[in-house]
Image (tube, rainbow, N blue to C red):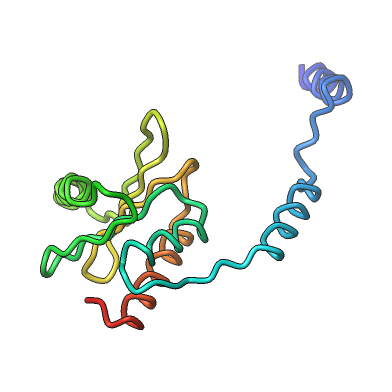
Amino acid sequence: MSSLSYFFTKFAAKVLDFDHTALPEQQFAMIQDVLANETIQIKGTKTKELLSCLKRKHLVNSITVRRLKNGAVFSSSGNGQAESKSAFDLMGFATKNFATTDIVTMRTEKDWVMLMPFEESIYIVKANSCLSTIELKAIAREIEFELKKRHIS
């Protein structure tokens, strides 16, 4: 039975050209070329301008930050208050019902919505694809750095 399975696997690999062992080098080269030529200046004194620049830099659809201490909301889109309230309620539910909650990830019709608590804030990131924990933390660290640099609480 195993030799039959081996035969069909090899046959399918030859006929259908399945090769999952190689990295897509051409795609990596294209992305590296685009990123090397594209420099995004992070500028702006208003938080909406700043978050819009970071949104373009990280190739996401929107970024919203809600401070847990004072309830301040910073958003790259116009609906930050409603979005952050829903995210706050959802994170409260997740932390209450699960032992550890790093990230809450949801799929909507249009995009992925990722919620992440980070340094007394909740970050809501919407993107066309799901981001990893490392990517979300990098975005959060950069936002915190830029906000502190501009003396925005």
